[in-house]
Length: 521
Image (tube, rainbow, N blue to C red):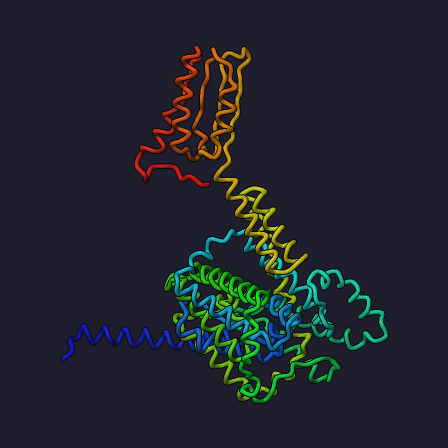
């Protein structure tokens, strides 16, 4: 028989679990309402049919949700990869997307299995911020044209530079009438989104502004029967699934396509794991297993590749909404995928009422938000070099492509690190009478910089009072220590008086570890 204490404990656990499930189900509906327009909008921004974005959202919930290493993170198509996919489809055709995504997912899965998840957390913030800003500018520029029912150009910088001509053609061109109407629908969407997010009632705070904007813009376009482009989603989602062809699977082994797959794997992994870090900061109930999360994202992308979906990442926008809505377990992320599947199965015709310009307008706002000035201010605290790396990454993305910009940022970060771990500053300051000479060493003294150190010290003429200051050294190896000891003896034999601040080193390296100053290289 159960004791009274055990009965109370079981009852309490049952009530807690029941309350958690109710919270998760309610949160899943909110996340579904946020995800639905974004799934379609990101697909259109990627140059593929909107149903491919919905497929990825479903996979992100139903397939990845149960196995994710970050239980409260929500996965789905991400704006960050829209630019990459658009260029990929434009260059190689839509039929190659599935095989490339299969390969990219395999790379991610293997990286998770071999415990490489933590490596992505070591990427310089300057590169990450620059990458996000570059993606934001490209999304803003391309979707600005789509918002007017125009086609974006092949290169990101061209989209940005042609914005003035888009305005001119819409306003002054004889064929600009329908484009102007589409732009007005997009403007209504943006204004509604911004006004709702700023002034929405507290009782309706969980209703996403993107959903409100889509409903209002769709209602206006439907009632007035506006001559604009609309979303085209087939009645049967299963009919849109096309398994990759064998010839296309073999073709991804070409070096150019392997590079594309590696780029998608890298960017998707970085975005997912950075999103997981943000989710961990927003709550304390669960912590991310980064290797498991990376493997789960890889498996999800392989499934998306098989089903003809878009690349998937963990998405901070949907994840933060999930937390704000009160989610406690992974049930919320799973059921948001269930609601997506149910909606497209029961009422796909409703999606066909949505103007394309409306979804593009939402992504224009999304792209704008990715370019955060506050990120530049954060980097300024660490000096000019991180800011330079930020703008170099951003510039590389705009001038060439996303992969080039990220690689440029990583190379510059590596050069900065090499400089930091090898730089040794030496300042020789004689007094007014040139009898006492102060020598200040700073940075890192290793065998790499020993020739330079020896050259400077050996140029000091004998017969002086030499004070060698070591308090600014971050590190000194045994090779330099041995040289300084020999140099001190040689100078004293030449008639010099040498005072070396050995105590600074002794105190730093011989006091208890917990009391040592943190040394940042």
